[in-house]
Image (cartoon, rainbow, N blue to C red):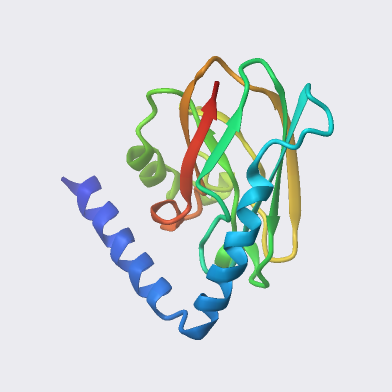
Length: 170
């Protein structure tokens, strides 16, 4: 019950934060539509999926779906297009293992500031980028796991409600 209250409180905070965006939000929405293609695997090397995800100060990823092939090498790059510091508006990409509970993970992650909001010793995380602030970029490389639909999110407190999606391995 306490977890449910925490999740609801986070959702309310996120809704208020997003509703304060005003006209700038409309501009961001238009540019986000163009950027969605960047989350697709590039075909420059059939053996490597080059995925680029952007995030901003309005708590949005440019995509909510990533597709790769099982066993494929993946280079995942996160670019924070905003201006705010990582302590205020930090972003990361966390891909959870199959069967992990997104809400429960996010609630636990919110208490782990000293570990960049990644719970120590968790078995829920497949891979994650480091937490970055505005203007920063980070990349990770890994081999795509077995076929399935995996959740991904930003683990900064309250961000998961708006910043999440599916990592689809075919």
